Length: 77
Image (cartoon, rainbow, N blue to C red; front, side):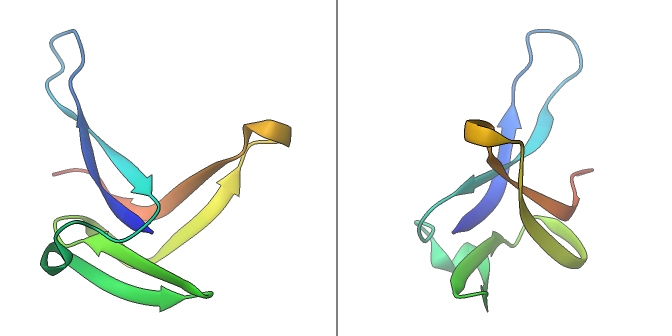
């Protein structure tokens, strides 16, 4: 699983909006990521992401509308 930054380009005057992108599999450039193994998962976190003491990966939503979320990131760049 790879966790990195996705910059959204809004259609108004607020500038760029950082957001987190989580996708399955390893990153294309492993040297740009910190690597962890937890809960049977290989997790790759982009070195450019500022993290707090711990990252938390969890499912949110209900029924067929579950999504994977990440907390513990500081998105103020």
